[in-house]
Image 1 (cartoon, rainbow, N blue to C red):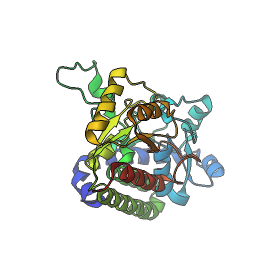
Image 2 (cartoon, rainbow, N blue to C red):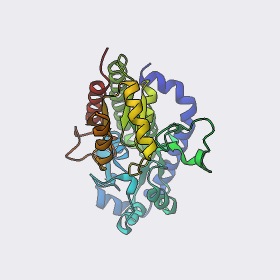
Image 3 (cartoon, rainbow, N blue to C red):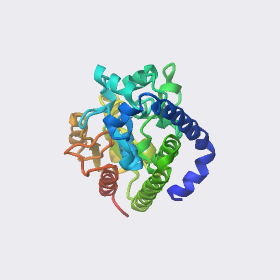
Image 4 (cartoon, rainbow, N blue to C red):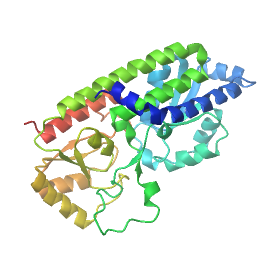
Length: 328
């Protein structure tokens, strides 16, 4: 089932929240067209000033907005987005924006700054798809008899939805509709750009389905638990050294567990990423006699990234997974 069919099946669940986000954007436009409009046109040449929280949100805004938007990211290239602390200058930028696109639950400082901002146009990508508790808050699911920390149900929702092309397409459609409402004069362009992007994500989904359908193993090890949605979408099992936070340290028991599982499931590779230390991943790989490779969570694009944008890096990730999992 491709992205378009999945989107149709999920539209009942997501249309309402997308409409709410679009309505919020429309309200924000009314204020943007008031006495501040001349200043905005002077600074952005008449373009909508969109602030994105980090790269996946920036990519959506740029791809869908095209020439009609001016996009600024709060997270600099090479900066680990989980660790972002909003500066006074960035807070001021938020106040001046026409719209902000963010993903609640990923960057606490952004969530706080957006909550305190008086800008009415706040598009939370988490409302445009469904976040799930994938049991990856500490790198593995809780077994029977294990006590879960108080309040875990709320905090365990995994925010890494952009690594699933289907969920990312849901968000793209919601953002597209919101921009159409905010800027109706250019609605046709936003609609076309959204359709073009969804088609590319459709093709990416098909490539992942075909590439990962017949592999020798379905288990892969990662540095932190960013790939839960991707694993769920394509019938894989992700085992993370750390939990949802990339800088969390695994216990000795967890490392031993992974070493044993590598032997049992035919795991060949421990994946690490470009924005955080690879020391733990390489230590585990050396102790277990495994290879290492990069699986990019796409939280930022740098000169170390295997591609210039989301689509290219996701294709590089697919190639890495195919190599590590093997083909039958």
